[in-house]
Amino acid sequence: MNYGAPTLARVATATGVLMHVSLASSFIGTILLAITAEAIYIRTRDKDWGDLAHTFAVISTIIFGVGAAFGTLVEFGLVTIWSNFVAQMGSAISLPFFIELFAFLFEVVILPLYIFTWGKIKNEWLHWIIGFFAAFGGVWSAYNILDVMASLSMRPPGMEIIQLQKPISGVISYIAEFQSPSQIWNMFWWGAQVFIFHGILAAIILSWSGATSVVLYKYLREHKQYQLKILKLTAPVITALTAIQGFVLGHYQGMLVLEDDPLKLAAMEGLFWSGYKNDPLLSLLAYLNTTGKFWGYYSWPAAIRPPSFIFVTYWGFMVIGGVLLGAWALGLTLTITYPLFKGAFGNFILKSGQYAIGILAALASIGGALTTESGRYPFIFVQADPNPNGPPNITGIPVSAIYNPTFTPTPAVVAGIIVVELAMPALAWYMVYLYLTRKVKTSGGGEH
Image (cartoon, rainbow, N blue to C red; front, side, top):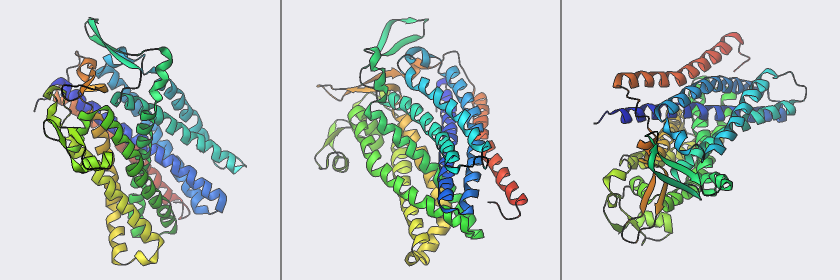
């Protein structure tokens, strides 16, 4: 295997981005759990839900604090390693980044206000509204970041990639720009919306599945009523969101890949042949018939093909993992809701679900992220243009064009970077552990 500097840089970047995404997903999930629990408490006056709301709010604050610091580190790494990224395409994608700045400030201001006014505002619904806007800030921030990621995979309408005849400063060789300034709003075109909400739902599913696994693990050992209440909230939601993710957003996302990047489609679906051939199963999914034909992976030159391993990350991790996650979440929902499903079936779901639900959600999320990011390599701002003489022409800005050629890391340096990247989420969850165990020790049994 070639452990050249660009390859090492991609590994370090991918690890950092995945770890940051795990924290961002956890924040979105826990703050949504907090405001959901608080709303239930206000309506029912059930103290369990009030305690749970405060617990999830504090957990979300811990995760946000570490995630914000880690995000700064990741952004510094992106600017250092991929220094030509902003220079070559900054003007084209500036709008969502600009809006995301306000979303981040929204979180920074509103989230502490939500925590420090707990129990100090007489109108409980007013306090809940503050929490709602804290959650909105997190989702809004994710919305804009995912919009940029969508554009890197599917070039927005009206965007042009200009290859310069004479590179600027010897390294800036491409410029991404819209045909007119007003077209910058095309960053939010409908294809990007599919990508964005697919990602937001993935974040909620991942974080709520992780919480479900932890609570189920505790419930099987302690059998406390508040734990069962959480499970009765999260399991049906995971079941419903997984179905929407697969049957609705997943379908539209797949159709966009079919239209905009048939080479990525060939790698994802394992169309490992050369030429234009029929694939009955894929044709049935895409066209509702069995006669459709598709260009095979080997129809394109080796230099522009994405890694073939994304067939495994797509089918083995994302699709199969997502299907099994939905099945386990449905089984858990039935087991804790209807006595008919208890017994051997229920025991199996409960005992296996404490591990399976979290692990399957993680595998599906990692598989989706790797498929998305590695699937467009070696280009960003990918576009497929018709070609009457063969497979569509796949174009974009080569990833190599945005790499900083002066950055030459050794395996030891990259290993050190990865250790730090892995340590940050571990630190966040250790702080959460300390908070939860402290509450148990000092509460006299009244807290959760």
